[in-house]
Length: 632
Image (cartoon, rainbow, N blue to C red):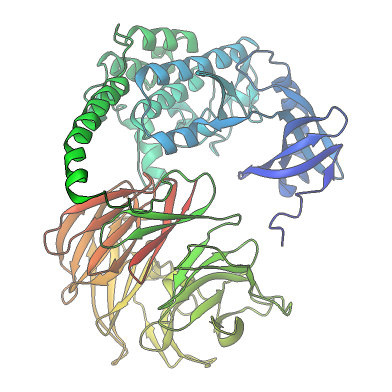
């Protein structure tokens, strides 16, 4: 079953071979030019935009401007046009990676390498600026990197958002920003203007990220990030890594100055200043570290050889996973050693994960199928379709318990009758049966588990209530009014210790509310405010007499007393923790922005990080392992 129906088809003389990436405006494929026999990157504009006449006119004008740039650091455009109502652009296909994936894989780059890559981006930008064009969306994913031996060649891509720098349109652009908000300049935020200096600002943010492995203002909420771009002074790279040259702090500060006139006058000026700030020695810190590592290994080997002779041999190394998967994957971590022991690469998306006592299942939303992971071999079985009889319903997520899985059909896909459903999946028979119908739930799956009490819990829009449904029931067994209108958008459910907790936005917009419910009494036990804010839902864990709540914006986990809701501890973990689970009497936390899983000892609160790469999201426990979904 092919997840993307376009793969294998032809469009305007190009045969589509594989997916490269998706964005809000377009999808990019690798394709073959059937006339010239060459590979291209084929960008297809979304149907919604292709059908908009004003956008079509803008598209025709802008791709011609982008194609007019002839520079070795700007991606060449071969052709653009329309085919059967679809707008497309065919560009050079670059064998390699992009800066976003490079940073995700390797973290902060060596200063010399970072400055070299950013300098090439600067040359491409200056070429565009000389033609009166502004890129407006300088970010790591638009920096393509091709390798030729030890050399890295940069192409600046995606000029689909360019504007003539002198045009009135550019000067009065809407506040609806085209660029990515981690790199957007203050003037784009405050009055919508975008000039060459705006690209220099974004280039400064790009330099900061290549040097530190993180964006300048790593806030969870978009508004917080935009506020910081307008009001906060840019951080210096040496604040993250004191070994970085202090001169690079000045370069970033100048490039990211609030006033456009205070910034470098061109990308070349920024690149020259960054190069001058580098130390004169060409030996990098990584080379020195590698030399020390070799010496250490040699010393260790000298010590280990007598031990091997005495014992008759060395113990076989434990299996290891790949901490830098290039495809969606499930990472398996041993709960005894905290070691990454297996990487299960997927040809499909990993939109959710659930476990029974003996099996692990991954949910592929686009393919509407379950993928079973064999815990003995770490192999993926054949896809199990979730709607084999073609009933027309569409699954949105999964959750599990001891002997079965539950599949939810989310609001918006509910058979056209305004109802959504929870369905039971039997792992042995591979069959799906209907469990219950629910009126327009606000959310499902991770946030409305079919819990240990044998019921389904929902937060419902109308009225603003928590509702409990017994198996097979189409009417709630109990409804509990929620006193605050803000509670209609719920962050998380947690179940355990004969209680149900709900974490949701507070009534002041500056905190989260934690609600504890007593399922036996169908009553609210308490509501407390927690000093955290999250626009994304997180997975809360219950164990060791406490609740463990990921604080996305604070890069921490809150330990909360179950009986009172009081915060007991704040434990620092990796960047943007999103999901937590208890396994082997230990807490495991998936950190979504730095490719790690943190293990926390509930007694000592000691934290151990396991690198797993990519962007972790969901985490479950099964047997002696925790299983984490990651995207590259």
